Length: 631
Ligand SMILES: Cc1cc2nc3c(=O)[nH]c(=O)nc-3n(C[C@H](O)[C@H](O)[C@H](O)COP(=O)(O)O)c2cc1C
Ligand code: SF4
Image 1 (cartoon, rainbow, N blue to C red):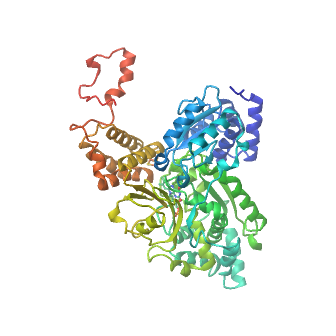
Image 2 (cartoon, helix red, strand yellow):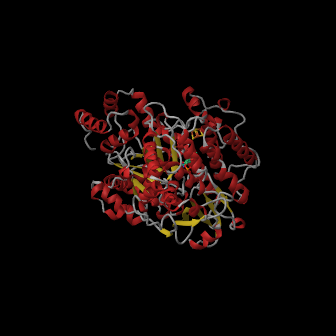
Image 3 (cartoon, helix red, strand yellow):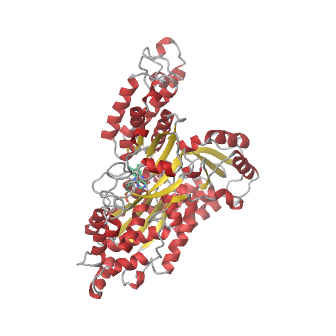
């Protein structure tokens, strides 16, 4: 067992972190994350110190810490290993590797070793589906796991080798770009799009007023910010994060939102990328970070914002330092900071916030809550972020890919962009292709590409189904492979997961249902209970205890989740089950062994504790309606 740090050293360490964050409680998630990086967990002593130094009640600190799956208020090992548990990891044999590692380290799955050296557990998709199976070690990603790699990792852990000394090759993440188009193939030089945006002002006099408008956030006449907004609108750019909202309208609403004294407008780049099967933002941020940051700066110019955030999912911790280096370079090049490009009052800067393992924080209002240092609970809407976002200020939230496209539109014009793709879906789309195919990776296509074409390009044969846009998207069968990627047919945030005929589509849906149940934030009862019931139901079918009545139960749950849930997670949680029932019903029917209905929630089993406490286990202490589904 490693010795616990002294109270004094905990206080000093916490003081250091708190000072770095100016004792600002809105930075709570970052503070907790950094304290944990040094202490391995958020011990009671660390929380005491935070309470005193931040002047925030301990219950609040614990409430925030308790929300995020990567923040620990119980002891964890010095090495904290989490196996990615997406369906593609399963298809690549992650379970056997998980067991192998646990066995070799003498640690119970999901627990910490007795000597406090290591804990091993599971987590949701880590965004490495093109190079799975994957894991996180102290939040750093390791892909392409094999028996040999797992044994190597076990050896390093047993020998207590510090992570910084592990072979760098273990942490290498490949980009796997298989098809590049305007975004991934762009050779835009840093600052070019901003210069082009500024040049949209018709004359020097107007430029000067537009420059003031950036500082003050006031709309001006023609040229400059209004002109760049027009270009974004003409481009017909729609958001790439899933909902497909028109970007120009969003930006305009933010620009038109009134500011209270002391307020500014805010630009947020959503890099939470938690949808299982999606990893395209990871690659964009690796290969084209300037395009993304430039797009954010163009947005700031268009709406008059002075502050920006990149909300980076915790699983992409390894990108934090390289991205901060890009930001530092852009500051040195006068592309961020004060008087950008020499324009007086053109002030804008970007900081990176790291998430801490909560899929729901990808929902824009939950993301803003998290940015404010709180639990990532989705807000009631309206008001929308464009008027009342980060700290109640007008805020734009856009996906990484949306900002990258905006930079190119500023550079080359809306008409150029609108001519790419289809009438209703302008531009290109990055697809994260994974699963049963020879060439998993990132494919950038003009909108309008058919599913069949993508399958051909990625080397997928004998295909049974494709899950487009992750569990919250759609699952399609071969008869639909001529459908096209685009808002007019199959909209997608980017995931494209291929399943060949050897796969059991029921198990695919069950994995997704487990994901939703795990990621439900629990704020609203329909989703909290509905996703649990759905999971229980699928598990019951898995055990062969299902009956035909279960289809009706699923329908009922779907109605409940769709109509009563507070946010998109609940609304879409039944999608994978409904889609697979509609297309692959035999996969369900062969599991319907029971003629009679048995409830997925086993009330009799739930009363076991009461029986134990009263010392009774006679027939009368059991429910007579119980059918014995204890499996
Ligand atoms: C549960 C949930 C998770 C989401 N995750 C993401 C995400 O990881 N990245 C993203 O850009 N949008 C995500 N969204 C959509 C965002 O709420 C928001 O619509 C999007 O960031 C807007 O950007 P866009 O207009 O550029 O698409 C999610 C929505 C929900 C309901
Ligand atoms: S629908 Fe689910 S994820 Fe969304 S707020 Fe309700 S409980 Fe949370």
